[in-house]
Length: 217
Image 1 (tube, rainbow, N blue to C red):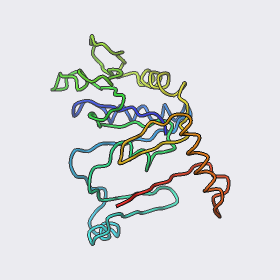
Image 2 (cartoon, rainbow, N blue to C red):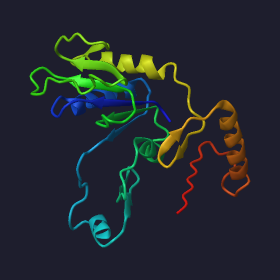
Image 3 (cartoon, one colour):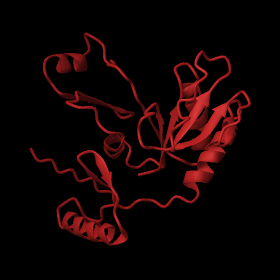
């Protein structure tokens, strides 16, 4: 799993616009970037009358639709998944995960502040995970200040901080939605045991990527 950087800020500050400018620049440099957006309320991506809408409306807790070009999943949650769970389930192969929102998550944050926005208070002013401020107005803060109108500068910052020296993780362990750090011994042990078991199964020969989920009531 790649590193996580949360793009945060008050409503209307330009978070989505910035992310949309960053994505093609990362793609040009060969990085696969996943984006996860947090929504405080309910949301709908399906429409009444569609088959998938009917499936959900008549009781299916999970509905999937797939085509050669893309796949969509709508799943009802008993409780909101953690950011780690979302990444493990849907973006395990991304080189970088950008999130919009998730300002309360324990992830490195880059705040966007645009001149003229109504709220002049920084969301991250007391947050130890605050990495940088992206703005179009000069500010004196204790983190690096990046130019909102120069997205290449933001990409350079993230690449130098997280991607050039990042080592790929071989094993990720989540227990009850919480990531558990693994030392080298446990990582090698789990890798050997799981790969050995999977390789012995028909269709599991020479696995490059394994996702194992164990749930107990």
